[in-house]
Length: 99
Image (tube, rainbow, N blue to C red):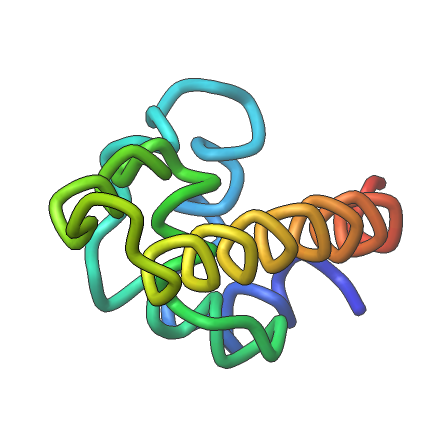
C-alpha cells in the first residue's frame, strides 16, 4: 500500500499523512474523525488510537475506580493489555508504510 492509498483509505490528503510522518503536524492534533478512521483501518479500538496519539492517559481510568474495586482492576488490566497489543500493531503498520 502506498502513502497515497493509505491517505485515501483514511479519508485525508497525502499532504496530511506527510505532515504527520515528518512531524510538521503533531500527532496530538489529530481529529476524532481521523482517529476513528485510523482505528477502523487498523482494526483497533478508537481509545487505543487516541491514547497512542497522546490524547488520553491510562490514569483516566482512575476516575472510574471505587477503592478496592475488582471492576477497576479488571478494566485497567484489560486496557494495559490492549495498549501493549496496539503498540505491537502500530509497529507492524509503521514497518509496512515506511517508504
